[in-house]
Length: 293
Image 1 (spheres, rainbow, N blue to C red):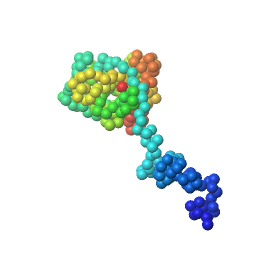
Image 2: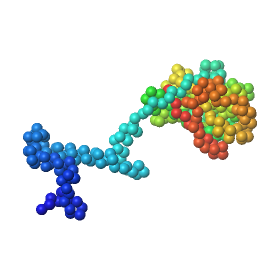
Image 3: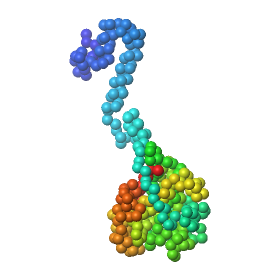
Image 4: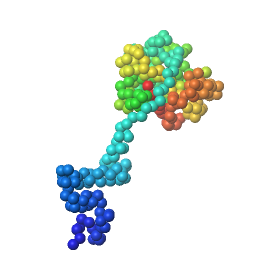
């Protein structure tokens, strides 16, 4: 009588050569007395190991339904997701003449109200709101060597207004402190600021300044700076924004400069500093950049 373990779904006997590894070991053990061959290893342990090997192989080769919320990733996938890769370190750049961090006159970092995500309005004695096309700025800070997200870092960010003026410095806005703010990076190393699209002023490509500190407490105490650099805004988006009312001077100024010829971004064309853009003039844009420090 045929052993039902070695028959197919139609009841036909499976040829010995196709019965698999477990059958081969059982046959070998039966012929040679398992204890003598395997030096005391229990037969059940050996067969269990074979079964585990087969299951692991099947799991590794079976397709995974990534759309299912209950899907369990394979070991290799989990390792891949957990691993971090190195990222390019963002170049050190000048903070420019209008940082308001105490290095060139006024210091806004120790003012109550500077820690905020919406930087469109002034705070303190003035509540003037800077006008312009809406812009969300999402800056993600990572360790350049490991790629690890740097949570809890302090980021101070500032830029010019629609007319190309910097609050606290430029004529007419010396008593304003809009378009400046400090935020703490979240668990993903990201800070998000709500702002307006900056102008292109004479001699510079459109840009946004930032400083990274060890934490917010260090930033507001004007402590050591980890990284000072700038974000470059792409020409395609600049053209669309500068075609709107209030940015007329930017059209002429951008026509006279280039990213490659810019005094800051010119050395490498800003390849590590060009923001990725999403959105529209009507709905507003989001500028995103991941930096290594």
